[in-house]
Length: 194
Ligand code: ITT
Image (cartoon, rainbow, N blue to C red; front, side, top):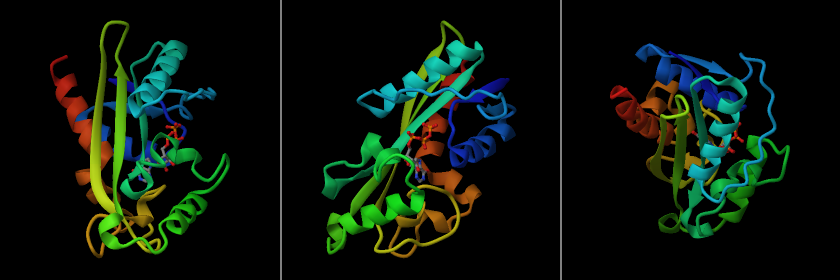
């Protein structure tokens, strides 16, 4: 089944391709389809924003769609940056700038207070009647400095244990444990009954 991955984030597209292709789906990106939609993500939750993106891309294409809204919640910062993760260091900032801003905010904060979690909401629209929303998480903590060259976004500063950042796992390893993989497992369970 051809399914549009409603994201402009190339890191997400890569992960979805690796998660879905072995299962017989044909994931295509917005770029593959030549779609360049500006979508206003003005929801108040990850789930609402994923719904907004999925609805708009399904409206434009009429094809099955999966949209992802995700981000990082840091306990010490009251759950920030949360749904604002992509805009944390302002529009147009790089992953490195966002990571540095977060490290600056967390400077001097002791390890027990550095807990964080990644959240991923997926909203899937197959057609006008069949829609699914699932959420996956991954617990960890914020490191002291960026580490590792894999993945994308906040991966280099997100520690999964005392030594290892998420960016030190290759894609296959990240896809065994990530918030996105956990959400995708739930979505695939729901789609199995289709
Ligand atoms: P789309 O809206 O086009 O999907 P986006 O990058 O703007 O792309 P979001 O609004 O969902 O996506 O923002 C997600 C933010 O959280 C963004 O800054 C990502 O880098 C970060 N993020 C999400 N999943 C991540 C992951 O697996 N590893 C590291 N950072 C992640």
